[in-house]
Length: 157
Image (cartoon, rainbow, N blue to C red; front, side, top):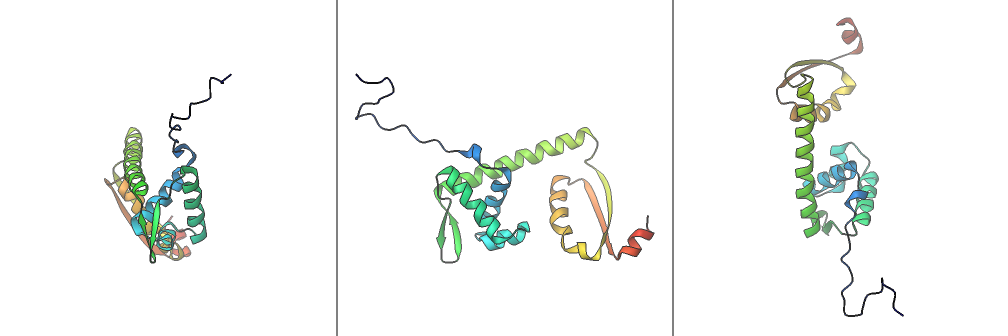
């Protein structure tokens, strides 16, 4: 007697589901940076991560999705058809998230004005990454920052 869950031989197997819910926002950010740059090494540098970290997160993501997202062409990584679909989806997702952040910030009056920052000399290498993201998120905020040593910074308080 056949079980109700048995399928006849002429019925195609069910389509597999992509498990995008198993991926994290950080993995999507990493994927998007690799897709934009075509290089794990360049993406790692831009994200201030170690290259093996980027490679590991991409591998986990591809495993969870059951799809290859890149083809290696020489030293460059090119997107597969699945990778192109994911890239477009990620770009749309992050645009929506930025709009949500901006709207939530607007509720608290955090969308315009001047932000003055003083940073120590060693932090000047980190500031562009943080300020770039901030400026994209809050385009109406003017950012002014100066680089100085610790003593100067403390004396300005």
